Length: 85
Image 1 (tube, rainbow, N blue to C red):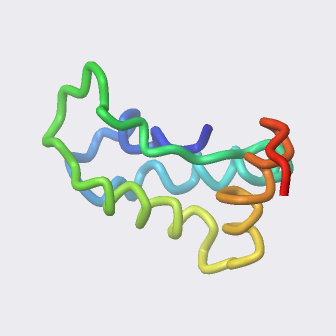
Image 2: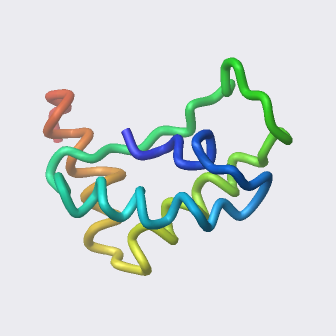
């Protein structure tokens, strides 16, 4: 699951230092990556983010690639969890 880059970041906002790691995970296994908000953010110790900031981080990971975004948000979860169309 590719939603916790902000958790490992040293930054309080923006999380620029998480971008290379998120991209590396996606590049290593684009057919297996899924995303979730991690709500309600258990054991969160930093400034509580707005969940939209996490979505923005995902968009930055995929660098505007809408096909890859669809794979992460729709196709991979459907395949990995056995959802029917």
